[in-house]
Amino acid sequence: MSKVAVFLDYANIEAASRSMNYEVNYGALLNYLADETENRILQVAYAYVPIDPRLEHASDQKIEELWNSGYIVRSKIGSIAGNSYKCDFDIEMTLDIVRTSFDLKPDIVVIVSGDSDFVPVVLDLREKGIRVEVASFNNSMSNALSRRCSGQIILDVLFEDEDYYEDEQNPDEEENASNENFYDEQEEN
Image 1 (cartoon, rainbow, N blue to C red):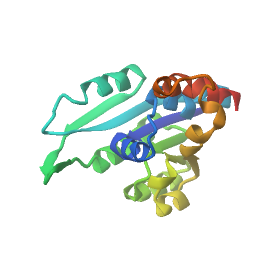
Image 2 (image 1 turned 45 degrees about the vertical axis):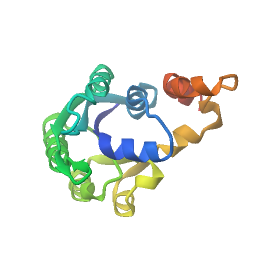
Image 3 (image 1 turned 90 degrees about the vertical axis):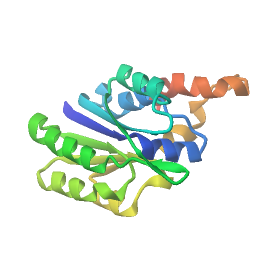
């Protein structure tokens, strides 16, 4: 069994999935990344969720869902930047990745992000003999990151699979069913 540690860059994955009109079921994603039938056992999973300072409680439900799905959630209030806000978690994620790798000694670290800022930590972990996989959508995967990791998990494939959606759904039910069936349908493939 390979011990797996997962680190989710929530803002990066949400932005990429929204641009393609996908809604990610993060619990199902975690089960997919640490699938015991593939001899992968989850040691720990972290999710890093930025908080919009103009709407501090807008993400409360999503944060609670992430906790309930098995993630340890780290949240931070961003700072206003023009008509939006900025909240950078790269340093916190990197520190947790390094600390977890030292303390828990996972066999596999999965960074769920396409951000090239993680290249230095990817290289450091690989030099220490840890397999580093990057899970991301194609539209947000940095070329530098994809070339330097041990393996890629392209999330687009999970949503483009024809079996992903049930045939006899009405359009209003499609979004909810995609979340409920994410893992069950993937097991068959």
